[in-house]
Length: 365
Image (cartoon, rainbow, N blue to C red; front, side):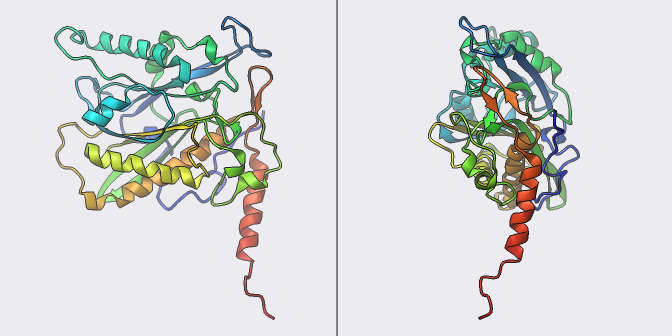
């Protein structure tokens, strides 16, 4: 097994802003992430849901408070609506989040939702009796290139277990949780995360992004400004998967409308990696503020530019982290997703940038 390195550890340019201590979403105070990874069997796809299995669940808990009793302001952007995520309309309408955020494969959304509902009912006995029901949020990507997705191997208790396992950083990235069977730019994808520190008029805030990366064509891949997908010698194989889920959290006191503005900027970070948000790709960004719900000391709209920059940079780096930290995986029917060849990638970036800086478009006659 080849050791994997993050692009930041290799010295690549990833933006202007400083990252947090772990450079992941748990740099935002109080945020917890938990995973259940399901890997079983190999060889041909077996009937009756017997595998091979390459899938999982990722749970994100924005803060330690009971979210049903102490919700968070939230905003969501549907960048491309080819997706089956649960809970989107409520956030669009009401602008807040009152349950954990769950990620899994497309055909397991309802099973994970069942687990989250159990979790919420256990915490809140008043639900359904003297209180309204919560808005369950389960977001998804299609991992069927590697996984027996029809087998629906994720069960409600896997969602519960992911929630129980949730803890602080640094978090696992690459082939973990919901990212186990995911592909990105026809290479191995999965979970990636990054964070940025924002100084807003002397007040320091953290913004973190977690990506479930499962999208793109290899020929479109850009890393640190270099068209790596066109330069790599690796051959792109298999159909192009769809969907990118981006979860953004910040401890800054932002309104639901400001959070929607931040979510809109995620597409600019996607573009830095080469994404064109293809027709069959369900691309969503959910942004949440963990500041107290009753906090009315909101940041001015005129002070959002550095938050926009943070979203763009952390989105791009989270996707690159998913690629750099994922490992080659073989799934059903011998389907293989190769890991990004890191050494070749770094050599190509150095050669490209070295050649560019030495290039003179106006040679002496």
